[in-house]
Amino acid sequence: MEMDVTTRNFFRLLRAGAFSEEEPIEPLSAWKWKTLYRLSQKHGVTTQIDEGLRQLHAQFFVQQTDALRDSWRNGMPTRTAEQRGRLSSKRLDRRLQDILQREQPSPATELLCLLVDMSDQLLNEGLMACQLVAVGSFLRNRGDKVDFVSLQTWIEQLNMQRMASLIGSLLIELLHFEEDEIPFYRQQDDAKHIMPLVNDTASHHRWYVWRMAHPLRYYRYYPSESVACFIASLTHLLDSIEE
Image (cartoon, rainbow, N blue to C red; front, side, top):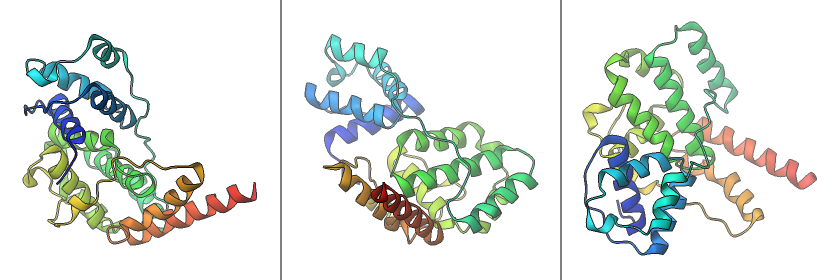
């Protein structure tokens, strides 16, 4: 997956801070270090990036100014992953709520909610690194306690096999997970084309247009849910115009 140097360093530091993976950090200008810091705030992973800097502090290109170092130490994530456990499609959400009400709380139901929440984030706003780290950390720390047979059944009931597999692809591409660590992963070769990390928009009006159209980029991964998100975004846009 091709990335610019700032994004490459971002994920290297994230993997170091979240999973103790050591990789060489490439040189960055002061401006690019500040860009990386803002990226970590946007994605709610400032703490993990700071830990990555601590672990890799001996590397020559990790050296920073005192002011920037203080920013990492004192900075707090500006966003956190919202936990909803809901789907936009009323039909699919009824199935989801039936599963959660019928089943006893367990590592499997908790992982299901993490996958649902990440799916919702991807469809509505794009990738948020803290959610990907949350799924990865859960698999690494509690994956041995998950009933993956039940989880796969629920994923199929919610028609989210391809979306769950896409999340698995992102874990492999961005956090260097192995396929055998992700039982719900089914190989697909186009995940590398879906990495909307930075969604800068030129104006408030353009942001609404982007937000409305964005879910359809994932239609092939989750057709019914992407359409439901598109309709919700369109309705919100029309309501805003009326106001």
